[in-house]
Length: 141
Image (cartoon, rainbow, N blue to C red):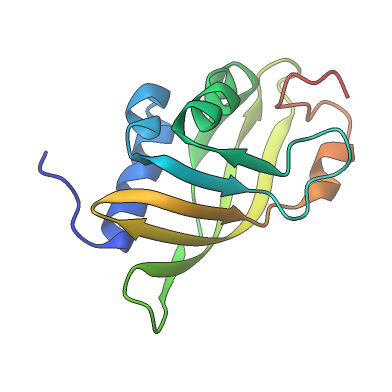
């Protein structure tokens, strides 16, 4: 596959990689100095990951915790900066450890430079991790 050219195309491609549980390929979409932020992360969970290696370490075991099935309700909004998109979506699947349903709402502000993610602010719902069986980070919370 040729490299996605627009931020929206890159983002759609990244979702396919997550559904395929291809975390190394997903991480490869990041710029070396990419920044991932979780402004609503509760205490004990990271709020900022600096660099591709930090993103890789954070995401490495994601498929062991969450079995993603789909990203319904995907809406990608263009901004006045052609490198930046705003994404609204849901991630649905199941929690691997318990088999419980997983249904998370996301809003993300994503910036792409030279076909790579450079900034990804993930405004996921912190209330979801307070529900029993949704420890998808491996933190033991």
